[in-house]
Structures are given as structure tokens and as C-alpha cells.
Amino acid sequence: MNTLETTQTRPIIPALGNVWSALKPLSPVIIRVATGLLMVPHGAQKLFGAFGGYGLEGTAGWLESIGFAPGLLFALAIGLLEFFGGLLLTVGLLTRPVAAAVLVFMTVAVLTHIPAGYFWINGGFETPLMWGLLALATLIQGGGKFSIDHKIGREF
Image (cartoon, rainbow, N blue to C red; front, side):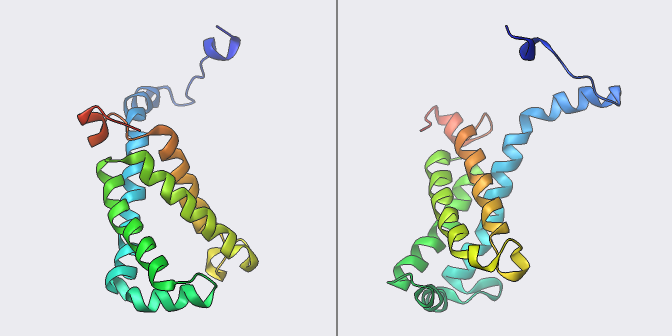
């Protein structure tokens, strides 16, 4: 073992050490489930026009206006990924393939938003970057112990 493996840090508040140790296995689950659940409404906006969204046709028009044609195909693919992919991430089924698809989609979104700068409030790449990093973390971690992937004993 190297020195890094044998050295342990001590919490500043010792009583919290046991709390953090007990909750540590939940961290990947929180990331996966939150990422999935928070994506679903974005998909609902694109697919169904819910939550003030523009639906497929409105999203398709916007996508074509920024150079993604055929817009309807891209709108459908993105909406399906966000809505159904978000549900799959939430339950941990096909976790890595969905996370990989989200990572690719968010990489394109980051590149598309770079001209607007960093901050999302100005149309920048901040939020797609965060989503992409969450997808990358999920891709690396996989579904984890609390997932359907784990339950069925199959993971990519």
C-alpha cells in the first residue's frame, strides 16, 4: 500500500464521521436519481409542451434556427432522451448507455452555448456543463447497488 491508501483524514467534528460513513453509499444514488428526475421535465417540455415548453414543433423550429436539421428528428431524439432516459436513470436501468447518451448530448449543448459565455442566465454553457459532468459521474459509477441494473445482475 502506498501512503495515500493508509492515511485517513479525521473529521473536524468527530461525531459526524459516522454519519458521513453511513451515508457514503447513497451519494452515487443521489446523483443518479437527481439527474434523472431533473431531466424528465425538460423532456416533457420538448415532447408534450408541458411546463411552458414549446412541444416538438416549437423545439424543432428552434433547433433548425441554430443549425440542427432536420429539427423534428433532433427535437424528438432530445425529448425522448431527456424524458425516458431521465426515467431510466432514476430507476437505474441501462444506466451507463443512457448516461453516455446524455454526456454526448450535453457536450454538443456546451459547444453550442460557448459563444454566450459561462453563465446560464445569459444563455451560457454553465448548466449543460454541469449536466454533462453529472452524466460522466454516472457513466463512471454505473447504476450502483440501488438500481435495476444491479438487481438483474446486468450492467454495461
